[in-house]
Length: 125
Image (cartoon, rainbow, N blue to C red; front, side, top):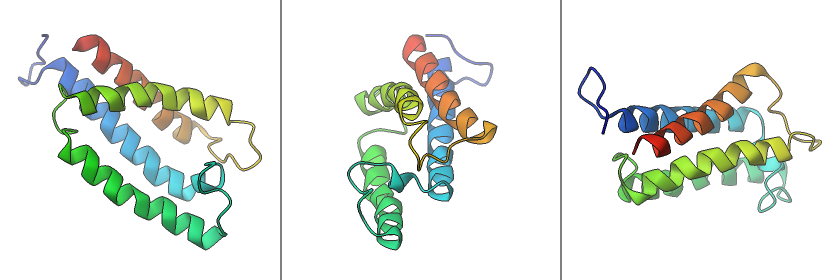
């Protein structure tokens, strides 16, 4: 395993970069009303959909941390990196959805950056 100059395996550096970009994307997703395009909650009234979208991230993040999201060698970490790659494709597929608001460089940099670092993580382990 290749180590960085600060003593962390490069896989961990790539994973933590992916995780940070992904979580930051989720902050952007609130601003961009992502719940409006998610098939599971898009039918909800605006205020309710927003609150469901925000609050569903609490148990999601608790589960990720509990099952090893802070250790880049876990199955959870590998799964999240894999999903970061799939997530890029999902945003590309939904890019023409009338309610898709991820239409600037910053939003796409977070999405694509998470996917690239997720791929780098998987290649480095």
